[in-house]
Structure formats: C-alpha cells, structure tokens
Length: 302
Image (cartoon, rainbow, N blue to C red; front, side, top):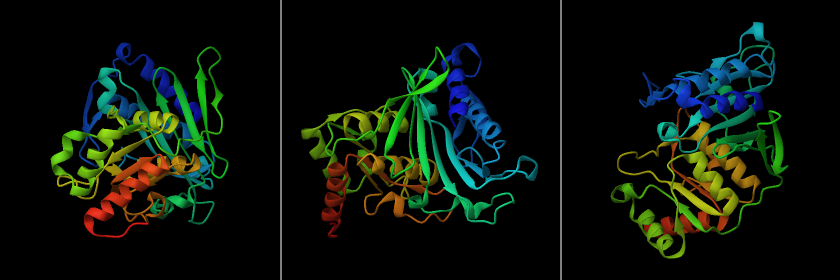
C-alpha cells in the first residue's frame, strides 16, 4: 500500500504537467464519469498489490466485479478493497484527494483465487484499514485495531513514510461539521434539525472530498455527514470502499460511525457496490445525530 501511495502521489503532484487531468471518457459501474487519474490510480493499485503473494482478490469502486489474483501470482490470505482516488471531482481544481482501503482475511479456501464472498464481509471483521491523503503533504493513516490509529507522512527527500501522528485520538466532541447543505431540502426533518443545531454550535467546513473532510475532523475534532435523501434514498457513499474502512479508523481513534441508526461496522453487506448513509467523526456528535434523528422519527435511540 505504501508503494502504491508513493506512485499515485507522484502522479498527483505533477498531474497538470503529465496530461492526466480531465475526464477519461468512460463511466464506472455507479454511472459516475471517471477522471483520467481515477483510471490511472486504479491500475496502479492492482498492478502493485496483485503481485505481492499476500492477496487473493481485489475489489475497487472503479471495477464492475472483484478481480481474483491468478494462480501465477500466488493468491494469499488477504482481501483488499479500495477507492483508488476519492474526491476525483476536485482533481482539476487542485483540492485534496485521497485513497481509501480495507483489508479482510479471506473466507474461501486458501491456495485458490478469491471470490465475491471474500469481499462481502461485515466491517467488524476488517483486520486493517486506512487512507492516504494527497494534500500539502502526503499522509498515510492506518489502523490494525486494537493497536490504535497512526499517521505517516511521506518525506520526499528520502521517499519513505515516517511516523508523524502516533496514536491518533480524535476529540470526543468536535469543532467542525461537514455536510453538503445544498441537499437540505431533500433531507428528513431529523437531519434538518441536526444542522440547525450545529449551525449555532460549530464551524462549517466542507471540501467535498471525503478523505479530506474526514482527516481534518479526525485530527481537529468534528463530524462528517452524507445522509440519505429523496434523490439517493439508500445513501450515496459506498459501504465497502469508503464508509467501512473509515469507520474502522474512527473507532480505533475513539470516534464513531453510523448510518444514522446503527454502527457502520455492524452492517452486513449484500452487494459489492452497496451504498449507505454516513455519519462519522467525534463520538458525542455522532450520538447526538442518532438521538435527534430517532426523536424526530419517534424512535428511541440510546
């Protein structure tokens, strides 16, 4: 993962000079138009990871189906799922973007290529998860809970990730709230009430890149929300590639993550590209959202 992050970071840093900005002309399985860097990052991840001998299958937001590791590449015991370049709508305007990844232990027989059932595991069974943010510096944050969450910054002078954020602990109550308020009219009354309260208590910060918003709130304290709405009744973010790995990190750092009713890590996935609402960040803020939504819906939430 560190090697893949270095390669992707190098392309991101010189994107404007390497003819990799702009749209690729293709769409992914979600119907989203792919950027050139989306495709490049996806190819880098697969080419680097599939030859390690440690992974039996990979799955990506940009691929229709899981990609089993061939017998020639010696399929291993782990499953890797990833969003190769989160926030790609920000690529052309030079805003922070990132890579998100999730690691499970396979459930299919060892010694053979992996399968879809290896990917469809509940988030609590992750053995590790992480993300890379390509911002003013390139930072890799990962957790192999219960070992906590740790951040490593890429030192361009020596080409190595160095420990810069050991034992990250996110504040129990945050300063910031991050949500796309242009969707306000499509939300339920519960989420509208949440934002009305947050407006009087917190500072609004929204980049529109999940990794960037999550990273700021993880370090400084805050909450990110992407509720379901009338346009996306099942939510918009992907459970396996985005919500679940970030929830794993949030909990390891003392935070929480929910779909508004239940913990993200307790959701049983039914399909590879399953979507979910997401409320993630400081624990007290996430619990406040759950209680407010439950109260508005007439449901008791502890």
